Picture (tube, rainbow, N blue to C red):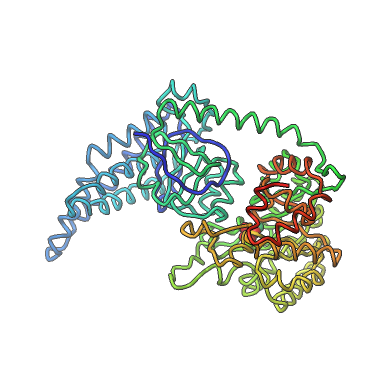
Length: 585
Ligand code: PEP
Ligand code: MG
């Protein structure tokens, strides 16, 4: 039966494929395809692990002290029974044979199928056996992770819809459905097999959504219930533009979305012709279109779409998901240098580490529900609290600046005292490098304007820095008191709120007054519906996901910046800017 689930649109495009349900706790399980001739080896690997666990449990059972509670013995019986259950073993083998999933993935897929069956049981005792199954699966996974896989991952093939409908077995595109994904999980999936993502939680500018967008694959977040309503292996359509997930689509709907998919491809092809066209408005205003990147490798994608530099390198992605081991100076230097060299002489703006809030380092995960991490030890606050870590990063960035133009960007500043401390540490990092005779370069230093306090005292910021960069994702979050990662208040997260627009406009004016360049690197920069408004307010430097650059360039080419000025000021002054924006200019 076809039904749809509504969420928040994250990344454009349509993905059609089978659902892969992954529990958040299982996200570190490897997901890759194996070759057909590796099936038996993969099944054998699984068998070895399972037998090892059976032996382990039998040993435990044998060694059980005489006075051990009876329930313990019964529990081990249940675990052994579950482990040898036909539905589990046959199911897992089917995922390996028919879909060519690697063994770990096959095991967790079958676990999700059985877990759902347990959830639906009327009997409370039986329902609770799901936890036992989970423990058993966990043990088998641990055994498999300890033993290296002899099987090499294989690249998935890209398939067209027609081909898919003919072949219902393997190599079908897969769409990941999870309750939640952390930004670090998303990075792992950057190299993965999935053609789309759906999550229950998350807002449109949560960092998970941001990474999905940077991967340019269709995604819908904030669906609240998708991971409960979608079953393992269901056919689903992800409409990343409308924020809709269609489950078990009828042939008519499939055909409609197949058409939409092709239209999207044609549109991209058309836009790709603008790659080498300079971004200049009709009245001759030059506009800088820069890329936001998460990893040094992304520089390639940035160049491919004609970005004239990197306006935001979110360096924190080098720090996340490393089980507490932070990258040392050399590793960071190599990463920054790779980005700088990757951009072939174009400027790279490296933002110092911005962890905290919805980007926890694993060991910093805030479990205290009463604390609000978005208001906590985040970004520059953490850097100043860990001066040794910060100095290491600053040295690495200064060293990378010997290889090409680098701008240093500081996130989340609100106090002049923080600016002074940061400047002192930067001077110290330079001295350390000079004393050690280590080659390094000059950097221009900029501040992110993303806390309302910074926007309200922007003159002081403009005086203290070489440039400013407006982080509207956080500026909206902190101005409107809306957690950007919380889907329950996503409807109130409004880039066009008059208070937000006034802070953006004031920052742009201050930049012009002080002769300091102002860039905008929040998600607003990549929304073509806002390009004319931002141009009208005087913005000439936009930084966004590479995937958005050409669509924004198209808007720039069509705009007459001088004529947009008065209209833009009216929009900002309006009580309901959205209505005025919609009426057009
Ligand atoms: C922002 O806040 O707008 C921004 C660009 O930084 P991040 O999204 O990484 O917080
Ligand atoms: Mg921010």
